[in-house]
Length: 417
Image (cartoon, rainbow, N blue to C red; front, side):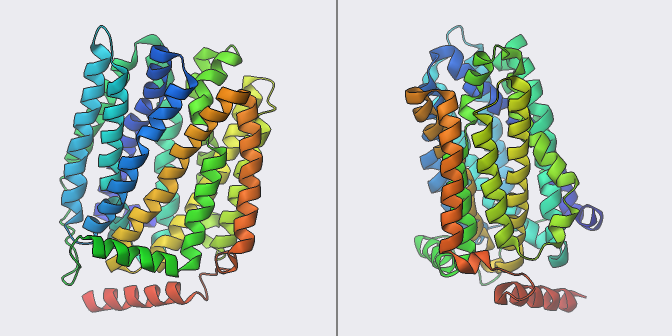
């Protein structure tokens, strides 16, 4: 609890994140549900994620560049306002006598672009407001925040959309952004370093070169992308609920992964003490694939929920290790740009994975998509682990980048004292 106790700005960011995560997760259930109701098509639901891919790539990278060159607080607040507008647009569309399918694609893409413009600044800000030795604890707290919204909100979202309709879900999402902005407005200014490079194509290339030159960082990106592309399948949840004759359990399917992730977070004190995070990511990602493959064999909703929960726990452990590596080894002047690259790794994978899951289900059914995807995930993760020994053997106690960043942070804190 150190970061919450010691940093006022972290408390404000954390509280804002809890509120907006709640609304965003409700909309995460509402959008595919509404698309399914309007089209009754696997492909149409999967294309929602595909439509968000291009803005995610473009704005994620540019968001990283501006995070290193502008006041991060201003970026976060303005993007929050943009997200409020897109959520309100979805609400208005849902209230129409004949809601338009194209609005779900266009506004969904716009919302993803704004969120990806904001996310690098949010990630980079943690390095400024949380002490070096508390980064592991901050990673666990971030996972707890995510899990709070991801457990309660999808279950509530499933109830809302099936009882009151998607407009009610979007209205709640809009209200959460209003409350969040009131908190974010109170955060102190977080200007860029005096010698920060202006946002440009050149600065983006500089960040990419740094990432490519760090084989341990590349391992965190590539393993997560592989795991998500081959095993992410949330786009199939509305169809699985119908196949198992439990449409009322739709929200539970979305919440199950977060239940497992919450258990991993609440018992995650051990994860903050692990020093071999690279190996930890490989093991956790492989277990995620195993759990998804097993879910293809689930004969009823309860066993399916257990499999999804186990997958969520494994994915959360992987996320804790990756975030700790990033915040303990990346220099401050590059943190925003690297956060943009990180965003591509953990956001593009689920998008492409849902498109992959929908396409495979279109040809072989939901069970085939889950089983084959999970097995392909395990194979890809093991292959990457073997191909990237520097990532596999990473140790925070001896890694040159971790030691250098720790020394620099300590020197900076002593100078301020």
